[in-house]
Amino acid sequence: MRMSAAPLSHQFSWQATFYAITAIGAAGVLAPTPKPKTQRIGHEFAAFGDARVLLAMGITILGPAAFFTSITYIA
Image 1 (spheres, rainbow, N blue to C red):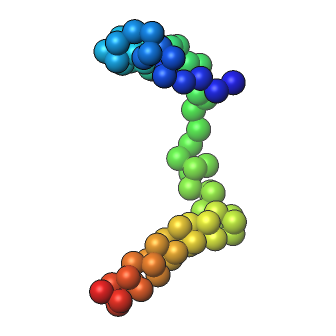
Image 2: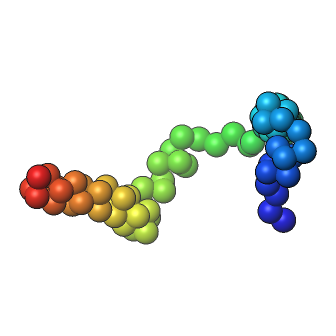
């Protein structure tokens, strides 16, 4: 379901819409969440041993680096 604040802002002022969205956001931030189970930090670093993780990180780093290098060369 997709909701928009546009009908609310047409019915009321933009300030009322702003405060309504702020209240919804604050309720989401202040809502209680379940406490995650604790894990060792070594368990988190074990993900670096997965080739798919390293490939995704490499693409994330090298893709923008190549783009900015080419833009710098053109400029």
